[in-house]
Image (cartoon, rainbow, N blue to C red; front, side, top):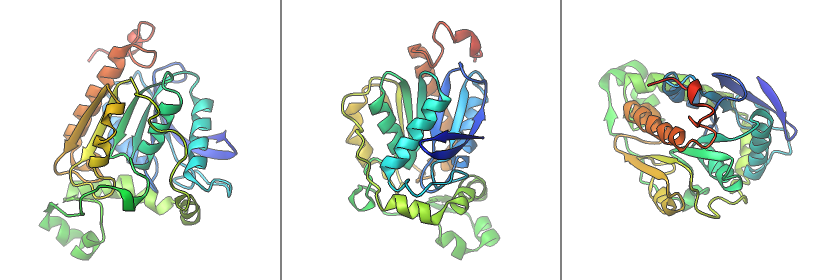
Amino acid sequence: MFIEAAGTQVHYVEHGPGTGAPTAVFLHGFPVDHRIMTGPFEPVFARRPGWRRLYLDLPGMGATVAPPEVASTDAVFDVVRAAIDALVPGPYVAVGESYGGYLARGLAAAEPDRVQGIGLVCPMIVAEHAERDAPPYRVLVRDPELVAQVGAEVLDADDVGVIQTPPTWQRTLEEVLPGLTAADAEATARIRADWTGTFPLEPRPYQRPTLFLLGRQDASTGYADAWRILEHYPRASFAVLDRAGHNLQIEQPALFEALVDEWLDRVEEAGTGVGAGPAQAAALPAR
């Protein structure tokens, strides 16, 4: 499906009940697409069918074409806000992975009373790579069966996965590679050239349920920079997972699902209009 937002035809995938249900908006990393979010999150929400889920393709990625004027992270942020305004009439929770986490922080800062919770998976905290505090890349597990299947040279070209096994590789092929292949190289280079947003990120403490999920071996965004902003999120759980790089959701799926479930419990407990408040508790299944 598509919706016009700030002059851009934004592609999105929707699951669950329609308008009026508690809503989660998902923002993927750069330059992948919505599949990196539907793969890990839909199994969680299969246990919570009362939620409406909106997975956006960011401009220049997936099926969302970026017009020439979308040439910065600020422009991407404007498109995202316009798309959410068009799709969601009221409060929602924002879930961001990597670059999408940077945008989600901006959404929470812009409308803290509307954004009723944020979930951050390997979020981009510091925009410029050279300024990030991240560990060097290293592979912890390389399964000989996978080496025989795809070849060591293919695995050597992967600078993200730290757990290289047939199951993680298959999920990478299904959830990560399609977005990388679909990305518009010219558009993403244009955005990358003006990468650091000027929108506020933490102008004040954000008082809603928050989740930081970070990989101990994440060589892309790291985990230490996130620790430095933790005090801006007094309702945050902060988890750094071993055996996890920038694709934490693929490499530690059981812990990922458990921690996302617990965060959603806290959102619903808050009863602030997105989760199981008095008007919506009947719509959410007993678990």
